[in-house]
Length: 138
Image (cartoon, rainbow, N blue to C red; front, side, top):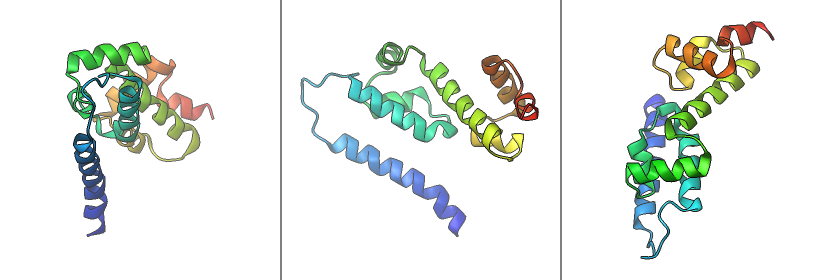
């Protein structure tokens, strides 16, 4: 079934990348939480924000404990992990609202929100108006 393959392929690719990442030799004096590590985390978030990756998974990806990851992430981005993930999701939602005709329900789902009300609340808090109000203003 093609749908099943579409669902399995991203997970398979992610697993392969994680295995490859862990198999690479990392020097003993490697700077944990380096710019390169943070870039790896940001790329991962950009590629997987729709799946709401838990902080623990992103920290593990770059071999950091959650507490240290949070400290380094905030230093690097100026935002907490949760704030950055939310901002990424809402920025994508805004792009979809402004550039497509898909329904708000579909946009909500594509951005990784479980409920329309949660999506609406966060969107309004971020942009000062509800998603439908932004769409009406076009």
